[in-house]
Length: 171
Image (cartoon, rainbow, N blue to C red; front, side, top):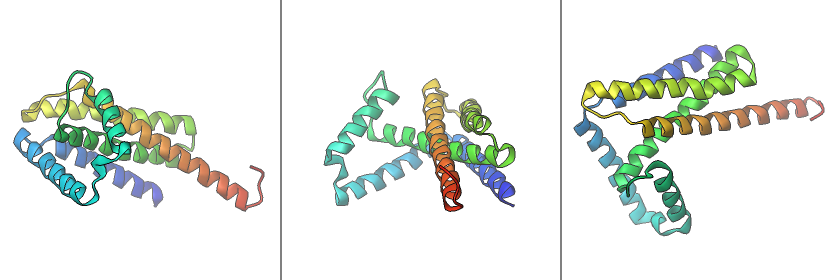
């Protein structure tokens, strides 16, 4: 049952990714503007953009994701969405492959390669909807998948060690 649920969740997530990439440029722009405005209002209450942590994170992301230009806030929101979507896909891909094969090396490779393949196809799909494709976006997507897969891998190891430890096994 767990395998089917994971397969269903991963499939729904892939459909969601392709839904977003199939949006025309004006719809995609409106979606990111709405998220940006929500974050601006949230910042008005929490004032998080004035923290050193935020400034350091923004500077890091600007250098990493936009090596050739100074991005706007909406640009950062759009690239963060890429990273986040593929972060979750990396988690799903790792756990899905581990549930079937039970091999860490295979699951780590699937946690990175499957989302990266989908990212390439996603960028290609955008070209049919009046949007450009970008190698930078694929790299951001792949990085999101790697971080998601790494988190899933660590969670799996911790759970496995906890179960062994609770059963009296040697850690």
